[in-house]
Picture (cartoon, rainbow, N blue to C red):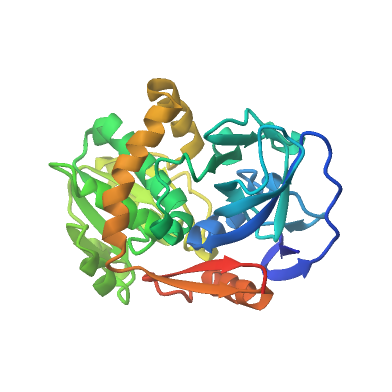
Length: 356
């Protein structure tokens, strides 16, 4: 069974059941055990065509399978190096199963070498065995599904900014401050000396954001005149054109870099006017940073650094994150539409399985 979303109207969705194809030599079938659903998945859908997210798990014309992160188990394998029962973490469709073509299978995991994924970012094509994953902890499986891909992005942004000496600024302004990518970034920045972190959020969400304890200042979207007048970097996770324009107008030439990361406010995106003050917004594409740091540190070095940063972060999240477990098609559709329309409390997140 597959959960499908119409590419031209993200509110239109359906479920499709088809018989599983026969496995060919060199293929394996993964049974999707469970996956997380967050605003990150809405970003995947919003940028589905622009960033090729729809291409990972093709569907019939006009429809897409939104990528999710979760755990799966090998239920059938025609790859000698990959035995049945192997449990992996990785990029999955919101489906009951997935056929993959494992390549470079080893004790750490494998790459899906299916032809349609050959030109896509390799970061998303790797499946990590849980028995060899430096991040994996059985007691934190929920957090790994919900937060690991978001925290990985947070980690890479933090690394990118620090590597560039914050573009000469010491203030980082982050929109959609209640989102998990934003508060992961704020958590990492809060552990650095000399960096002031300002979170932008709705007036209704300001109390929650302040309570996280990782932002030096919290400013509501309707009070942006309270922002300081000093050199700053803007990390745009909301994707709200009105907020972006206001931030750029406020800082002007003092804005040293503007990074586009997400679209939690996907319904309020707009084109970038030529007259926008300050630097041109630049899309932050995490796989490019992964490629750089993998070359600098090696894959194992990057994964170990990520694991070292992850452990204190995930312990911190247990103090405020409530995980909602649910199963079945109706639960998945309900959770997806609630996320799409912004009806999810930022202190809650869904772990789902398609099997009812």
